[in-house]
Structures are given as structure tokens and as C-alpha cells.
Length: 77
Image 1 (tube, rainbow, N blue to C red):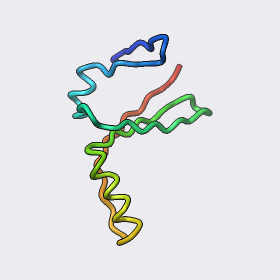
Image 2 (cartoon, rainbow, N blue to C red; image 1 turned 180 degrees about the vertical axis):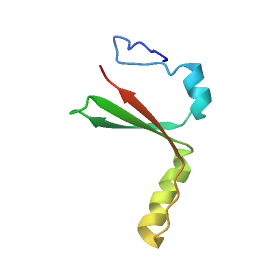
Image 3 (tube, rainbow, N blue to C red; image 1 turned 90 degrees about the vertical axis):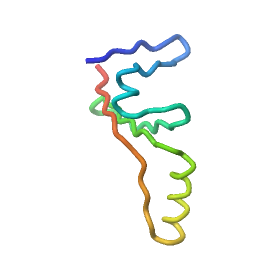
């Protein structure tokens, strides 16, 4: 298990081992989905946000889908 601490301002560093394992790089986006019932969060790593936005545009106008994501699940105790 890898642990991070939340700062007074609510900031969290992503440990090197996690960044390397998931290929998280500067500029990537993290999308959070919260499940209050189970007290868990799922974090989706969006690679190359410009391509992700382009994929949304293509999907809404041409019916194509492009996904550049990895998933992280977090259990909140």
C-alpha cells in the first residue's frame, strides 16, 4: 500500500511509484468520480487532454470515440 498525506490546502502529492506505474506526466488531467455511499473515489487519468477534447468533439459530430485513460480506485476510510 502506498500512502499520501493531504496538506492544509487540500493538496496531495502523487507518489513517484504511482506516477510511474500509471504513466502520469505533467499536464495530464485527473478526473474524480465520488461514491459517497461506499466512501470511495475513482480517479481517471486523462492522457493528452487536447486529444481528449478532440475526441469529445469528434464523438458529438461524427459518432467516433477515442479514449486515452487509465483508472485508479481509492478507498476512503
